[in-house]
Length: 296
Image (cartoon, helix red, strand yellow):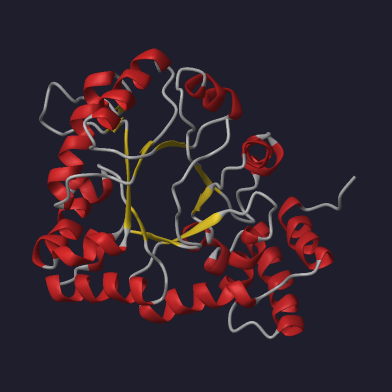
């Protein structure tokens, strides 16, 4: 089943660390407006980000400036229930992809974000107790109520994706996956092959490996930076992170990288990577540096 009408921007604004940025309301509005002015209209959230605070902090901006809502696509995720200290009902980290939790979580996200619909809702992690029929019931209920327009998954294997898709008469829109030169599993386990086959574009999280690519001192990260530095000399890229984004985007599944920053300079640098075209040998030089060996 081929993906449908949802259009996301070529880069995604990620707000996982919004609460850590310690911004004022006006500063948060400026970050959002900066993303929009640069053509980044898709905003990525999850119910649990910032210990359930990030959606509300973002929503405060939309409540103050509601016209911004119509310039963006809002994405959220649900399904993870962290333990809560002192709460006997939440004593262990676990997943909940039951019908009621999906619906209740989506409705809470709408309240937090100050909007009456989500453009895209993702199941955050595959659940060993996942009941595909129950998840489909939740999707149909939210869709019928006009509360969620499109659905997808995050971190799903191809078989988990196919299981859920088999219960739906509309296409899942995306699979948000970890993808970087330090996390290449989805290139080799069939996940990105499936995206190509279905014509859906994956969203790529942690493209810079949480900073490990730029500052990690383990042998693999050091080896990668050496290769990236060589390619920087060849291409004239402003910084190594641009080469990483270009490397991710070169995959034929056409991943949409998530930029997890509120720093204008870093945002502009990431977007400038769209002008960098790596050769096939440069791309494989990065792959080889990560794997520690040549292709077979």
